[in-house]
Picture 1 (cartoon, rainbow, N blue to C red):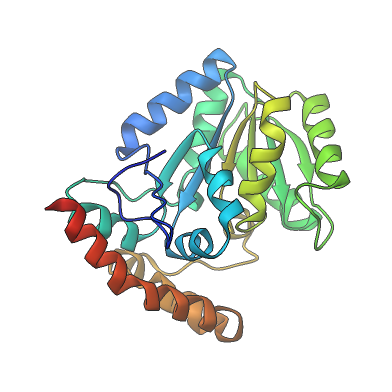
Picture 2: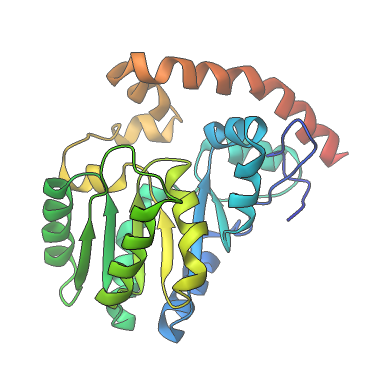
Length: 254
């Protein structure tokens, strides 16, 4: 999957934001759910770009996804510098509209990730918010689980038995994308969507940045203040690669 989008790595591997328009993306996903056709959605941000540069196998995982949307403002800015308008589509903001589409298509939903308590709370909130929504499966994998190991195969079996047609993966990157890539072929009617901390936001176990900070593209600062020890290194690596990506974007445009 090649493109002039500036989301590439050291080896000149480029991954394309396949769905730059939010409305068109949701229309396509709705049609797939109605037809019982599976899909897998990855939401790319700068941290993912860092991982793509450092881990060659991660490139193949991303290429296995049917849809890639822009999760972070830097990806939107870089894409526009390269001459391509791209909408911001955070994974955590896809949960509600996709649940609405699931109700319309009468598609059961599965929640995978986080903890049992968080999944139970999230299911209750979603079913209350969207009458007719069926959360058919809730799976909280053990800490440190391998997305290519025996537990992944068990998750696939449980999803298949539940009849779920839409599965939200809240495992963090790259585990969630790897799990989708590893099990989607055996579940061709299931749509997988990687959403990071999205379920925790709904359950209230994590608090998202205020709207005004999100509008100013400062959500990263909110998260850093909440967990500096875990995120300082990650954001430092993202900042370090950004100037080079700006250069790539400008070069791609001209």
